[in-house]
Image (cartoon, rainbow, N blue to C red; front, top):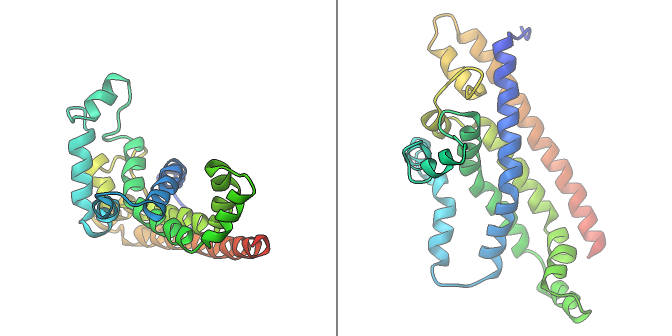
Length: 231
């Protein structure tokens, strides 16, 4: 049943690569955004918060269409990148961007909740011992927020792995280039006799996502135990 074809292996490998790169690239921005929303007050904060979470409530096709308008070769951002030799539309790198955008709200929310749960007195104590803001962030805040950072990263990976709507709108469904597991399943369901092969990929996608969530839970428990020891 699980003797997969070369095309299926390519789709699985491409999905894992896109999800991994999307998570790693967006993680620093996710931490920075979570810090901004959790620790600062400024005019328009609610608007920024709404924009960050907008992909969660918009139809994924709308998000993909917006990316296409912005990052196509004729788009305002895509044309600038094209002059630098960077093309995102209809490339696997564009799939990374789409997956990162769709997964970003989940990452930021998990990290923000973890930051807001930190006792401010611990950071204040570091300040009284002579640590400046940067050292306090690196040595106190981020280690204490490690469980949320881990959970945010794993949730973003799982979301990016299963992303479909924004990806297929922005980069299409090109075998070997942008055809992820989700896109391959969609193509197989439109092919006569393809339901069995679609089911195989669906099972594999479920196993990978479930494994990611289990690993997330185990890592979170370890991180919480470590943080409890530090606190």
